[in-house]
Image 1 (cartoon, helix red, strand yellow):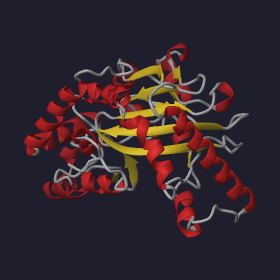
Image 2 (cartoon, rainbow, N blue to C red):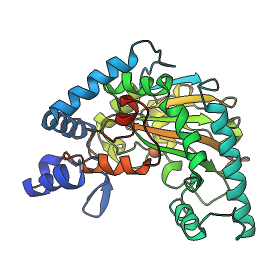
Image 3 (cartoon, rainbow, N blue to C red):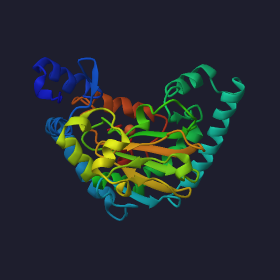
Length: 333
Ligand SMILES: [Fe+2]
């Protein structure tokens, strides 16, 4: 069955559009992502309903771009580059190492946390990814560390790459330290299989190698946009939540799959809504990355009233924006 918003009632779509946003769409107890075409349609509707804010973000993108150069240009849904020299990146790597050491020690000993860290909140944060192959390493208890992690992603080199791709100044929805233990397990689960993400018709995720990444660390592996969209639009298996490697290999040779491997600083921008991807499979060595997500604030996952945009703004409420661009990036406006 191919899911479409047109198969739903008007009240259902009204609730999704204005109250909840189309996030993970569940139909008949099966999880389906809203089709790419539907997500684009909802995005257009949201832009129309929020025309002044949309125009402000488009204008800000152009103003923010004057005098600055993006570090890369996304083509076919992705860009690979070296982000080691982005202002604040090396300091952010040091924070990744420090917070990972605390995390691993906590896992090992089950008790020791630095002074001032609330163990309950720490455990709460850890629990969010307890069963996922990709773990979020807690850091928000440390204001200075959180500022250091935000800094590189507030630099024009990085946000302009995402802004140029999305066609407007995006919101910085998430910044995380992500750690994949890559331990042995029975079969592949969730994000270890090829899938596309549900947040809108377009989005930009940024993964930066905080330590070297090679084939032994199970790198992020993805299929460029033109192949992915062609397969999704063909229907059948490819509209499902997860796709097996051999099915993809029948249509896209492995030589065209792209892997995020390289020295510390190696960076990939990838539209995970439009590129099939997987990572963190059982492998000989773990992986440590710095991660950020730039979203179009008018994408289908947000309600058209903008309440979730405000919620995102609270997430980084500790940061005092220095410019109007930062205010918009952190969804205060
Ligand atoms: Fe994903």
